[in-house]
Amino acid sequence: MLTDEQLNKYAHVLIWGLKTARKGRFKKHDIILLQYEMPATGLAEVLYERLLQLGMNVVQRMGLTYRMEHSFYKVGDKKQLVFIPPGERQLYEGINGRIFLRAPQSLTHLKDIDPVKIGKVLVSRKFLRDILDERENRGVYSWTLCTYPTQELAKQAKITVQEYTDQVIKACYLDYDNPVDQWKEIHKNVTSIKRWLNSLKIKYLFIESKNMDLRITPGEKRLWKGVSGHNIPSFEIFSSPDWRGTEGVYYANLPSFRSGNYVEDVRLTFKKGSVVEVEATTGKAFVEKQLKMDEGAKRVGEFSLTDRRFSRIDRFMADTLFDENFGGEFGNCHLAVGSSYADTFDGDPKEMTKEMKKKMGFNDSALHWDMVNTEDKTVTAQLTTGKKLIIYEKGMFKY
Image (cartoon, rainbow, N blue to C red; front, side, top):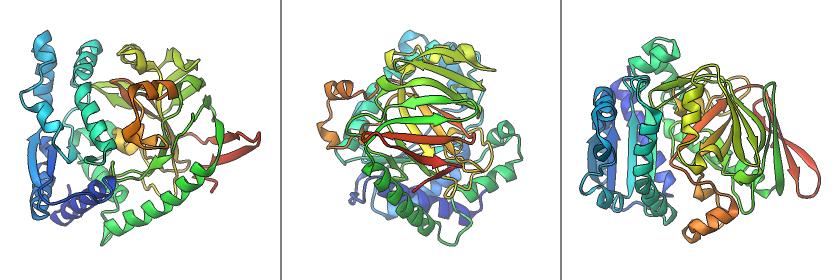
């Protein structure tokens, strides 16, 4: 597992991520919510002390064990499932930062739970996410998260725990004397690519690979975002398109674990912006139920591309955070069904209302599910001038 030195480096990178995500607006005695799962306790302890040293007020919470989570869904009645603890809203309305340390001890423990029940819980808690989104838009809150290696993650990725740990170390640049310097350099390089992408007047994007033929409509007043500090690691450059213009076939060749379920080889066919057909080698029924969670669940909320020159991730990790940042030979793209990101609006996010989001084709949903494709692909931009421009090929932006 991670050594004390590596834990300290990981903590420094996470704090860099949190500060970068909020553009350095933290002040002494801001409230930071530190959430973690049991195996990540050691990293949480290092972060707790470091945050106190920085003058932050830290609220510490360990998440449910996988047995507790299973009991919650299996035994809980309708009222218990949607119960919001006293003070939860007040906490979310007051925190200035959140660090979440993912360290799952099981990825399949909810496979016998009806996905509809899981969906109802997510919908009941969506208002809390909306509070945080609104606070982030006002610049008073930011977040970051990471993954801590566990036996379960290694098992599902079909490698040893040490091999999994080594991949985490490599992906987060923890093998460097000062990993934060590496992240600052990546941030600088990706900022240049985003500036280039945002200068293009794109009408449509065409994504083509062996198993994909998809058209994405970026939409009006959109920005490409990425490497903002929100995820560690993160190399993706993404935007939230106008969901109404999605047409064609998207294929996820990397498997996915979600809500205790495993899905593989998911193929989604879009027509007039919505999924009209689902295929999957494994987990088709689960996918279909997820897409019925609410009205926006069957629409696109995000489209993303990762440049292989930055990402050192080169294998399936059974963890979306790593898989959506896959580098390898051809980089990756991922498409998320469900909620969009308001911060991709080219304007003041504080001015965004629900009516504006709807008018501009920003999707709204309790679901946000990233599905990853690592095939060799070409992404071509149809510009408003009528010209076509290849912007991504062989896993790299053509910048």
